[in-house]
Structure formats: structure tokens, C-alpha cells
Image (cartoon, rainbow, N blue to C red; front, side, top):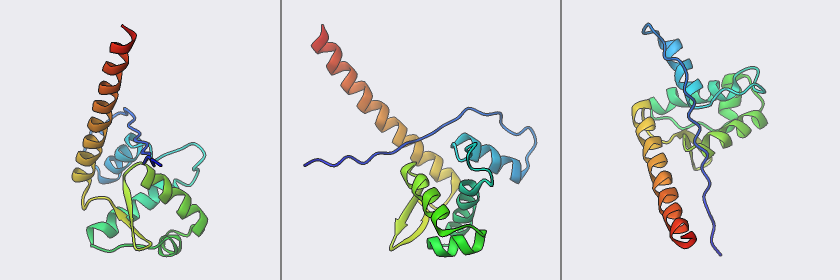
Length: 135
């Protein structure tokens, strides 16, 4: 039996901040990575992402209970959004605690870029094979 790991990488083209401002730049990154959703009124996913970014920078892993307490969210909300972040390849689970996949944002973008390139190469290979068989 073959199991496939699914990863949904969302990249949204948005307007980059004109002036250097940490909050606006974090908002830009969050928007660009699809961390905002119209249904997520209190921006829980983005808040979880920021909290994990800060804790990862400190070398600290966080449990869903710790995230929920720190952010004033239910554990169910945290688990839902952390699962979405894991599906996107942004967050990893280590011993029931969470952290960003890599230690900083630059490395995160580089890793996502590699994921996208691998996916595009797979698509290109399959497309070429299908084109040959249809010819």
C-alpha cells in the first residue's frame, strides 16, 4: 500500500509594504503565505504562526495547550490551525510540541521554494509522459 504525503502550499501575490515596518512586513508574509482566511475573524492562524516564530527563534517547542493558553484560544482552534500550518509545510510536530520547520523566515521561504520546485518537476515529468502517450 502506498501512502502519499499531501502538502498544500499557498502563495498569494500581494502588495509589499513600501516602508520598513515589522508589523506590516509580518502581515505581508502572512498574507502572501495564505495565513489569513475570511472565516478566521480573529486571525488565529496568523497569531499561532507568529507565536511559533518567536518560540522557534528561542529554540523552544510549544504544545497546543501552551499555545492556547498564551493566545487565549481554545485547544481545538489551535489544533485546527496548527494542522493547517503543518499541511502547508510551515510547522512540524516533534514529540507533541510544535515549532517552525526551520529556524528563521528566510530559511522557511527557501524550503517552501524547494518544495514548489520539486512539485513542479513532478508535474513536468508526468505531463511529458502523458504527452508522449497521447501523441
